[in-house]
Image (cartoon, rainbow, N blue to C red; front, side, top):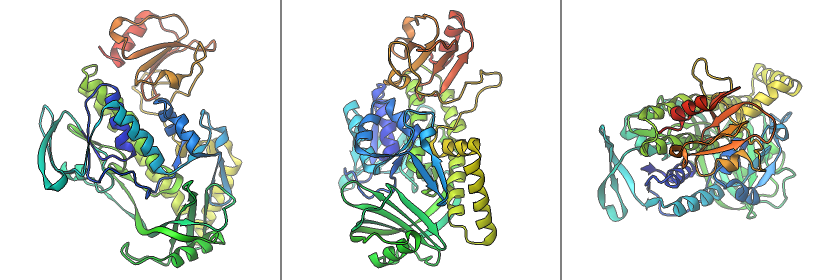
Length: 473
């Protein structure tokens, strides 16, 4: 059972249903794809995960690519140098991502229960019991082997299992609006911070733009009335002009928090996306991190539920994704603090960092790898091959295919330099492929595109042992 039908919940539910696992999604909102989303970019690693589901190319047709990411005005991260087929970020509203993910989940047979709110949750050795209140106040009890809370910052699942959500508000009274512009901005994404003001502009693609702004001197409650004049003024202070914004169809205030649950798992209950971690919108990493949580957890749940792996595999979700969530909190928070620097020593630190990153290629590539997600690797056991836990690029395979095409369907992919025929027990969970190059390493790639096992030279016996350990019986 998945609670929440945002991008994280939709990807997770679609993956499980595609793997043959019955899935119910509870969503307290009516069935509607909202255009009032804050997320506007897909990064390279997320696009790779979507490519492994045959979804990325459709989104590439809708969004607009951007090959440079500007930070602090003078620092530009060149995404064209990323070691990825998607060497750019894709600018498009979150609701376009949700449309594609929802269609896939529906086609896979996910059972959606809209206007249904989780009101209670208990678990035992065999599963979890959810109490839910549906339309017109009807209540029911539902049973599931596992429950995933993908229900956002105010997660009812997290509250039900008693997990704290420590952290703090970092920025208060951020203003949001969807507006039309009389003048088209020169850049696809327009962002800058000057003095006490910050502003960001991104296109919806339907003639409207999302504007996000903040002014240090306006620390007012989220409930304080907001008008277009305030948004225009903040935009002019930060960007030098307001581009003739008019006809706001929606305006709101919010505050940006940095929080992370100490554990992403409690027994048979898991947290993913904003239910597990929230942070500032700097770098556009929020939706992306949640989608990558889902990609990590889904194949593990499918393997355990279908009996191909033991429950211990699920412990690796915490070990792998919690450190990434913590790193995203640090990087996004660091970007915001440097962008809003005011005191002389913080301004000097920002200038020094900008100069350093512009001059030192490896450091700039590390920043790009963190923001886009391609630079993270997962912990590996002591003595494991150096590739274990690393992201595998979309390498070319013999016969003209690509790795991320071979990953479609949620299977492991064994890439070998020599002919190898897997036993019948692996037929529905393993694809055997060969390098298009003369590379001699043997690599077992997990369904989420990370290395499960590798060897510089391996015979059939070593491969069979690795398959038994990782793909399961």
